[in-house]
Amino acid sequence: MFGLQRKRIWVVCCAVACVCASTVAVAGQGSVAVTSGSPVPASAQYWPAYYGFIHAHTAYSIDYHGDKSDTPAVAFQYARDTAGLDWMAVSDHAESYIGQASWTATKEAADDYTVDGSFVAFRAFEYSNSMQGHVCVVNTESWTNWEKDHLISYFFDWLANYPEAVATFNHPGSYDIFNNEFYHFNYRSDIAPMMVGLEMLNSGSKFDSRDKGYDGQVSFLDEAIQKGWWLGSVSGDDAHDRVWGTRDVSRTGVLAEGLTRADLIDAFRARRFFTSEDSNAYVSFQMNGAEMGSRLTVHSAPTLNVYFSDPDGEAWTGLKVYKNGVVVAEESFNDAGAGTADVAVPLPSGTDYYYVRVEQSDGQRIQPAPIWLTRSATATVAAE
View 1 (cartoon, rainbow, N blue to C red):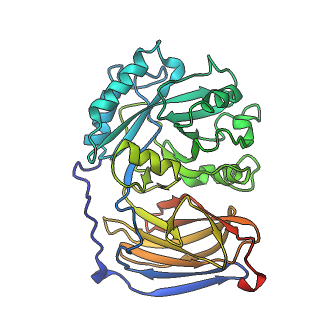
View 2 (tube, rainbow, N blue to C red):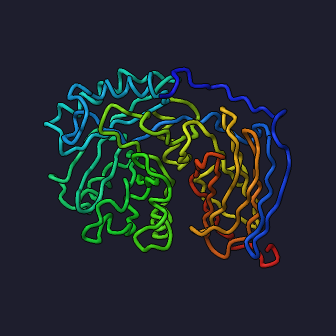
């Protein structure tokens, strides 16, 4: 169980860090230079991160395993006081709702437990189609379910009417019995702004469980991105018992202007978030000062910058760089709590996307949302 007084002031113990730098080059792909023991860089605009998850259930879901008195109010209090989360969304299965009563009660509980700067609670719902996939939806005044919208394409039609929504593809691969879960991420431009994330972590699972998508070549996240979606990786607790945030330590870390609903929603819509197998690790992933989730036009070969730290002083031991879903560079190192990496990458021929995974000594990994780079039409071959 996590302590109630989660640190909000991060201390980097540079005195005990192994301050060193190393470089690995990959032919045609660029290089990685890592410096351990680095202080928080001035470019880390969003500091600290805010930790929580969108996907959680209560007794309002028919398949909930816990006490039937476990309402959203109980979940929010537990998340705040026992798990030490900064924010959480309760997203019960919408087919379990009895009229508007459950939906209204969830909103009232979320409003009661939201205190700006301290804890943010969201009302959400999960569209749960047992043959075509599950999706969590936050920030709408209405809801739907598979009984109203039988096919996930009908649900997508519904979602297109709610541009304020934030939604995630949940645990892909779990409901593909007819080989058409999410229609294997066939792209829909009308809902692309609202679909912000995909669960690479769920119910205590690790990245490995989602690293081979429907095609078996790249991860589910990469497969969706390569179909045209603008997505980051999220962690879904998916608790069906009174263990919200304490069954495992995975979190979604959000880089927001502040701890308010509006700030968190803005950050989600910008894809400014990361998935972490650690409860409080921090990563900033930038290019030209623009954070994770950015889509940029570049005129010359860029350098991606990564900063990583852990307030508990846990050692960091490795970093992998992914280009279009494939590892193109990696580096092993050893530090004591923090480090930076500068990743030199070639000028893209068209549009490429990059992300990183940073690993700690206990094997826990953190993955920020990608950065998309498009070559400027005015750039010259000489720039490479």
